[in-house]
Image (cartoon, rainbow, N blue to C red):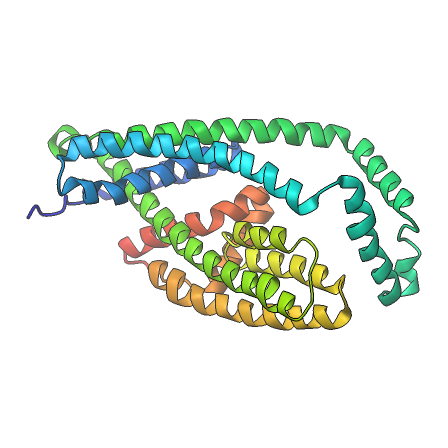
Length: 343
C-alpha cells in the first residue's frame, strides 16, 4: 500500500511568512476583483475529482482515472447546468403560474391580511388594490432600471466566471505535482497554502451541505407534509423549500433568512399558523446550532459564534461576497494558526 504524499515543507521562516502574506493578498484580491465565484467553482471541481479518483484508482491507473473523472465531471456539470436552468423555469412557472393570478390570488391576500393585523400607521402605507400594487411595482422597477440592468450583466459575468473556474479546477486536478526536488522553496510554501485552503473549503462547504439538507428536509416535512394534512396550505411552499436549501449553504445566517421567509408566508394564512411556524423554526434553528457544533465545529474547531463574527466583519468589508467567503477564509486562517501552534 502506497504511503500518502508528505506535505511540502518550507525551508525557512522568512519563506513561510512571505507565502502567508502572498496568500492573504491573493484571497482579498479575489473578492475585490469579483472572482470569488470562479474560486469556489474551481475548488468544488478539484475536491470532487480528489474524492472520486481514489475510488476509480483501485481498478484503473491513477492518471487514467483522473482523465476519466475530469471528463465525466465536465459532462455532468454542463448537463446539470442545462437541467437546472430548464428545471428552474418549469418549476417557477408551475409554482407561480399566471403572473396576473399571482397578483390577485397570492400577493393581494397577503396585503389584506396584513391590513387586518398590523397597526394603522403601517396599514396607511399599504396598497388598496391589485392595480395600486402593480403600479407600485412598475414604478419601483422604473426607478431602479439601471440597477436591474447592471444586475443582469453581473449575473452573466458570474456565470462566465463559474465556467472558467470549473475548467481551471479540472485542469489543476488533472495535472500532476512536480517532485519536491524540482520545486523552489517559495513555490513549495505556496503549494502548502493552496492545500490548506482546499482542505478548509472541503471542511466548510461539504459539512454545510449536510446541514442545509437536514434543515431543508425538516422544512419540507412541515410545509409540504404536516400542514397540508391539517388542511393548511402555505403559499409558495415549494419555493420556500428550495430557498431553504440555497440560503442554508450560508452558516447561521442562511437559516435566519429562510426562517424569516417561511414565517412571513405562514402569517399570510393566519396568525396561529405563523406562530406555529415560528415555533417549529426555532426548534430547527436550535438543531442547526447543534449540527454546527458537531459537523462544522469538529472539522475546523470553530463554534457558531466564531463563524458569525467572521461573517459580520467580512460583510462590513466586502458586502455579500464577504459573507459567502467568510466561513472558508476563517477556516483557512485557523488552519494556518494551528499549524504555527499559535492557537
